[in-house]
Length: 172
Image 1 (cartoon, helix red, strand yellow):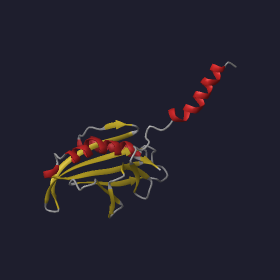
Image 2 (cartoon, one colour):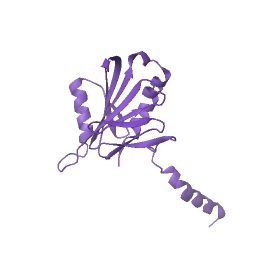
Image 3 (cartoon, one colour):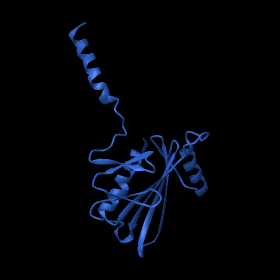
Image 4 (spheres, one colour):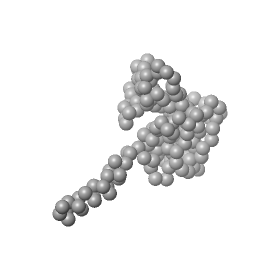
């Protein structure tokens, strides 16, 4: 074989693992968090504070307390006879019942809803997502103190971080 052919073969063998690497890898500076009993993970910036609430609710709060709290609950169907795409079907059915549009991306289907009200006697805006994929549905919410809804840190989280978190969700 000629020297050039060996260089091509060597390049393919060496670069193949990089080219085939999963596109859902975690962004640099993020860490993985378990949802439910650990069947699903979600990634978030490493500086987000983690806590839990009843019913296996994961709570993530951005640094410097910008007045925003993210909550995650997992509904996971793992029994015989359950369709492999029951999570996707569930979210589609919910969207249809509520006359909401859905977004499909990377094998996930999700819908978004908003409302407002009081949270511990403070006016708050809430955004909810139902994210369905395979046999999982993640219900994610963002609660924002109404007076902070236009703050840069809040907008950054809702417009950039939350979509990346949804993209990162996967079964373990």
